[in-house]
Image 1 (cartoon, rainbow, N blue to C red):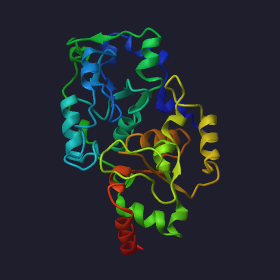
Image 2: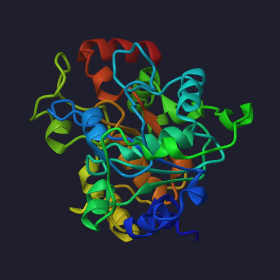
Image 3: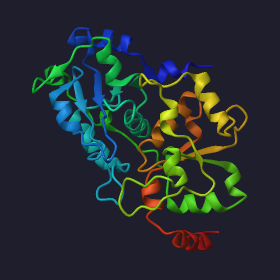
Image 4: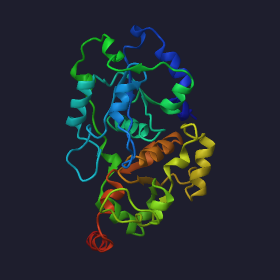
Length: 311
């Protein structure tokens, strides 16, 4: 079986060796910072990127490369929006991409999945994020000296940006209501919620105003932080499999099941989807992108009314 852990994750020691090569040897490498912070965080992702970053990095702002306007932030963009931004960043389908964040493996998986869903395949996440990179003494860029601007590349052609969104990977509210309540159809799915147990159980408030507490009918809680170590690395394959199994998800024997993942705004659900990808379940995963911020904006009575029309 292919080692998916090594295929989709790059260790910081190996990464440091790669970016230490002469600039001519890494001209087709794109290092992308995909930092995003939780909604109540006082930190400013763009200011921090400008102050210091991994050499040759470009910033991928998921709040801008998104469907705008929308009730929920950073929703998956259309083909035209994504392609337009990739042309501006000069990130081509033929490039090697390595993604990191400075938020502790909080947002890099979302950026990875965005690229993957738009057809890019030579792409990895820096395991341990910027934290481990700095801990190992990796070099830092600062201020206005952006190293990627010094990289000379051949002019692109249109095929370099022929990104095509896989629409089958995203589900909507109607799908969720129909399949989480319908007893026969729901046997085909695992509904997974990546929020904390407190938010899942409704004992803690939602960070966004006007969103009620609770969770989707029939969902299981797989808190995203359970997949990540204290060093901001993904847990081992064995640990990940044990985690899912302890929560009632039989990774080895549920080949017919599809994993429908959600969270608050479709961001940390991608941490769970990436974990399932490491376990060979990428083809079985779908994202409810608008997640609880959309679902929880409706009252239980409104959900019930929609359910009665759909089932």
